[in-house]
Length: 163
Length: 128
Image 1 (cartoon, helix red, strand yellow):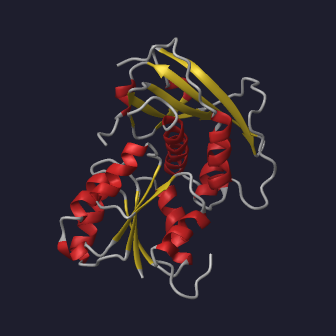
Image 2 (cartoon, chains in turn yellow, blue):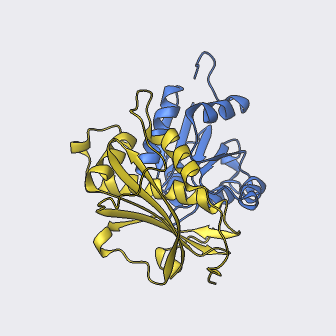
Image 3 (tube, chains in turn cyan, blue):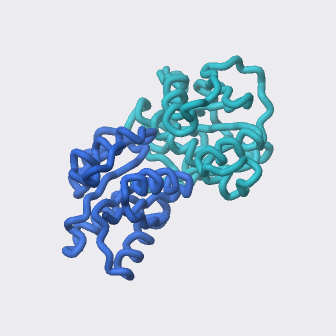
């Protein structure tokens, strides 16, 4: 199934991102996090994505720099940024995409299924046949995190779970 | 009290383990439902509480709940889904399969503790 790309999809990515950052990443003494930050075409190295298959088909993608990904992992694993391993980064960034994707899915046409997260270098990641429905930029600890909702494409390639 | 955190994300397991440990729980971990079943069956231990993610490889959280409910010795274990699956139909499926509670990610620490308190699973004398 593919989406009718002309169908308007109402997703408040800013609100969802704020909820996720507040719950998992912002500590008590956290410096200001800027939601709906200016989209200045930030450089990104890594992309974490989850695919949605069903009534809605597409991907939720979080892209950021290597430093930003280490910052996320260091908070979730309670380690110093220079102590986190590539596995930690993949796990943490993947879970960030998973939680964002799950919350986005809840306001999209249902029923849809969410895949397990996939993390890869931005330079190698492609989502052929997709269009970007909406995006937001979160600026946290002086790093940009681009959150994009894509529609269409070959969602099933992202190892969608059966339940 | 004994708890088990079942989630394929190590980061999420660490967060939930810390939360339960702060409440005085001894905590086991598993990366999916099958791993959890194997761990519990090999050790013969029955946790008071399982925090269960939904989307995991090998065996999903829903499949774990269904399997656990077939095992007489594990029937007293309280099952709390902690997942991004927030569609009403999914929540109904999990509760119908035997889950006792349902928490949607992102959760707050207090939100989980409040639900555990309602289930009588916060040890006396422990505050959030």
